[in-house]
Amino acid sequence: MRQGDIDPEFLSLGLEKLADAGLSRAKNLGATHAEFRVERRKSQVIAARDRNLERMQNVDQVGFGLRVIFDGGWGFASDIDLSPESARIAAENAVAVAKQFRTLNSEPVELVPEPVYDDIHISSYDTNPFEVDDSTKIDHLLSLNEKVLSSSKIDFVDSAILQVQENKFFATLDGSRITQQRIRVNSDFTATKVDKSSGAFETMSSTSPPLGKGWEGITNGHDYFLDAERIPELLEEKIKAKSVEPGRYDLVIHPSNLWLTIHESIGHSTELDRALGYEATLAGTSFATIDKLGKLQIGSEVMHVTGDRVVEHGLSTVGYDDEGVKAQQWDIIRDGVLVGYQLNRQMASKIGQERSNGCAYADSPSNVPIQRMPNVTLQPSPKATSLEDLIGGVERGIYIVGNKSWSIDQQRYNFQFSGQQFWEIKGGKLVSQLNDVAYQGNTIEFWNSMEAVGGKDTFILFGTFQCGKGLPGQVAPASHGCPAGLFRSVNVLNSAQEG
Image (tube, rainbow, N blue to C red):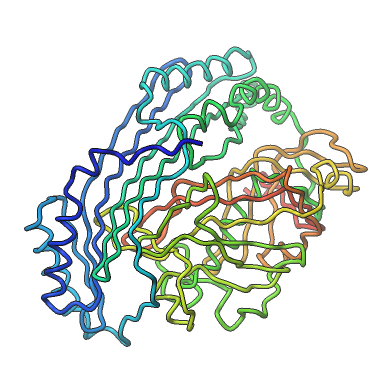
C-alpha cells in the first residue's frame, strides 16, 4: 500500500522557525517543559437527499498551540497567526497563565518520561480524498440514492460523505520533532419507509464503518450498492414485523452493533482520568476505579480487550500522540479482568506507571491535549468460530445488526442499546425480523454473560468520528474492532412500550 506524501502546503508554513521561536522564549522565561504543536485540519462534508445535492461544506483550519509547565503548573496559549513573533507572545501568555493557576494546584504537574523522536508518520491510504474531484463524490452519492429510490418500497433517502485530513507538527524543549499526516473517510446512507395507512415509519442505514483510509475506503471497501439493493426489502419486512415480547433472551450481536456497546461501557469506563475523578464534565466518571485494577472481573474469561493507536486504518491510529508519545498497543481487559487503563503522561504518573500509552489528543490547535480514547478492540476467538456457529448455539434468542439509539449512566454502568435489524432465532436458525427491541443491563452483568466470540472472519473495524469529551468540549475519532458475540439471558425491553 502506497503512503501519501506530506501536504506541501503544510510543510511550507515555516514549522521549525515557529517552534524554535516559541520554545526558546518559553525556556528563557523559566518553563521546565514546553511543547509546540502546529496543525492544519481540512474537512469536507457532502450530503444529498433523494435526487438532489443538499450540502457541501469545506473547512480549513490552521493554527498553533503552545503548552508549558512553569513552577509545577500548566499554561497554554494558541494563535492563528503563524509568525515567530506570535509564537514568542504565545510562550509569554502560556507562562503567565501557569503563574496565575499555580496557586490553585493541589500538587505539581508531573509527567512520566518519553524518549526524544525525530520522525515523520503518514497514515496508510492509496488515494487522498481531497485529490478526488467533487463531481466524482457527488455522482457516488446521487447514484447510491437513485439505486435506493428505484425500489417503490422507499420514500426518502439521505446520504453523505465525510473526509478529514489532519496534519500536525510537534516539537518539544527536549528536542522531539515529529511531523504527521492522517486521512479518514466515512460514507453512509439512511433509507426511510413510511406506512401511509398508519403513519408509522422506519429507517435503516448502511452498516458501513468509518475508516482511516483514503477514497478507496469508499469505492473499494464496503459494498454500499449491495446495501442499497437489500435495505428496501428489509425495511418493508421490519415495518410489518411483530413487536418483541419483553423478557430474557440469548443475543447474538453483530459487530455493527457491538462496537458502540464497547465504546460506551468499556472505552469510556477505562479512561484513567474518569476513573480518578479528574474528568466528569461530559459523560461522567467511571465505576472502574483504580482500586479494582487487577481484581475486577468485568467480563467472562473469553473477553480480551486491547487499546492501541497502531492498528492499520484505525481512526485513532497515529505515529505519536499529542504529547510526543510513540503509538503502542496494550491490554485493558485480559481473561475478563481489568488490567489496564488509557493514559496520558500526567495520568500515568498518578498511578506510578513508567510510561504513558499515548492517549493524548487535541481536536484543534486552539485546544489543550487531553486524555482521549484510543482504538479499543474486543479481540476475536483464536478458534474459527463463525457467525453461523454462534447462531446455531441459540435455542431462543435474537440476532442484532446495526446501531440506533442508546443511553448509559454517568458511571458508564447501567445502559440500554437498540439496533436496526432484529432477527428472531429459534432452534439455532434465523426465523424472521422483530421490531421494537432494546437490550438493557449493566456493564459487568452484560460482559460476564458473553459465552463466546466469533473468530477473525467475523471481525470488523467500526467506530466513530466524533466522540465527545471535556470542557470546553472536544471531539475525537476512535475505532472499535470486534467479532460477533454470543450473550446468554440478556434482559430485552420492548422500546415501543417503554416509550
